[in-house]
Image (cartoon, rainbow, N blue to C red; front, top):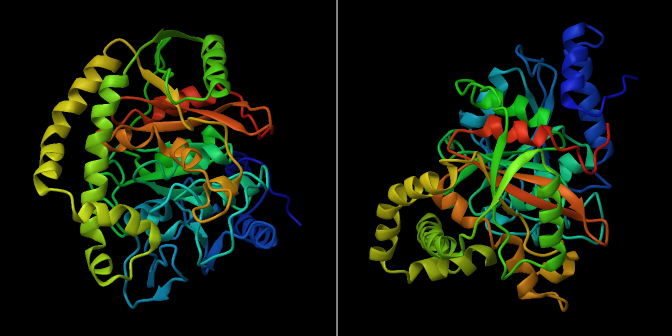
Length: 426
């Protein structure tokens, strides 16, 4: 039987070279994914695979977060299986991948309604971290991270409203690309907070993420790399665990780049307040009916009930300030540098029980540390890349997130390609 190579780009090369047919490649990927379902329970529904398409992703079978419409199927959005719906169009992001030749063999578990920084979900079996069964799995794109880390899919789409691609990627040692807000259409994707929602990509290798990004946004070209990369580095003095801060500074010192330390605590606090307002207000608007009749999921209640009490004037002020604050941020941090580097998770990755709400070992500080430095990026709409850079004392992933100018996803992936994969050695 055909043996799958470790990287998607390697499989693409085999298909292009005629060593394996696109159909054989599809079947091999589906069988491999099915063989791992029991060990890594993250599949909601298996989807029918048709004949392989044409294009650069022909013969590639992917699995994605169960938040996207497929032809004739309403997604379960983390609260149950999908359901049939006549003539329901495919989500724009999935249609773009299909246009490039890709197929989808499964939909994946997520936090209910994309509202959660971890994989906690009472409707499905617990998502187990393939790198460490005791470690937490981030959310809300938890199944996407597990499927990619376990080898069930070369890459997976997720959505990121306040870190929901970057957090699970960080917990599972993956590349996690939050794309520029609006770069990829969210048509056919269940909303949470539309002004913050972005489609994102999880993969083991930067080259594989680039193939998916290129299929999703072929109109955005790859640019030449400068002779010397210039970066700004922010490692907050307050709130980041010493082990994490030390690892990030050591990695930055060895990076082939000019690094300038910055302090952005004041602007971070202001931007974070705006991000929280928008998240609360729009979550409450999206889930208004279930919040009012008492049927909302716990994660939705935790955010949405606060949103119901938020003054509309606060929300409007945050939306009106957004463009000017983005311009100021870009001018301040990217006028003489390409990238801004900061922590992904503020603390070392905890055990899953410490971030499971309701568990006897639950620790609110540990949960907050998983999403502390995420939400303001969605408010600004900037692209951001989660990148594993070291292992902690328990061999769990320590990651940075790297921010760039709008639509600079290719440059973020260029940087990622310079960093050897931490957990994937092929």
